[in-house]
Structure formats: structure tokens, C-alpha cells
Length: 96
Image 1 (cartoon, rainbow, N blue to C red):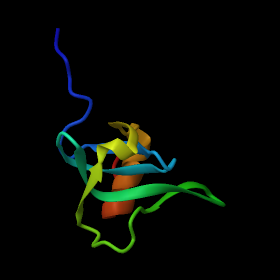
Image 2 (cartoon, rainbow, N blue to C red):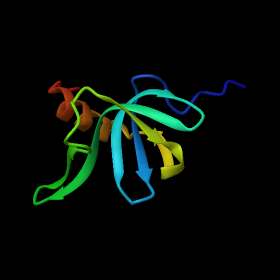
Image 3 (tube, rainbow, N blue to C red):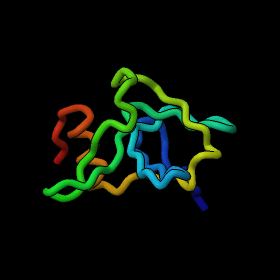
């Protein structure tokens, strides 16, 4: 049986924080107590539905943020449609 890792480097992942925030970002690496992501964005409700906004607006957009895993409820690979929206919002690249 082949067991596939739930996500790998450069995948778009979703994290749910203990504060209830849903954060989407590019996976960099995972260590025992932390997960490192780049360009994290959070879901925001708007008049046009759900959109993405920078999660931590005071950091440099290309910063690699280390997130303490004890503050997360779960981490999972992001749904394909939301991942396309994330890539478009974080890089300007439209995916087919």
C-alpha cells in the first residue's frame, strides 16, 4: 500500500487556528512544534461572497512565518478551487 503525505512543499494548505481563523498559505516545512508557511491569507466575508486578505498585514509579503502547531486545530491540503483563488490572490497568476 502506498501512503501519500497529506501535503508537500509548495502545496497550498489550510489551517484552522484556535481563535477560529481559517488561514490559507503556501507550505514550506513542518517541524516538531511548528509549521512554516509563506504568504498566509485569511478568509474574509464580503458582499460578493468569500475572499482572501493578508493574514498578518504588518509582515513582508514574502516572509516565511513560523506558526506554533499547538495553536492549530488542523492542517490540511486546500480544496483545488480555493487553492486557485489563493494563487491568483497571492501571486496574480490565474490557474486554469
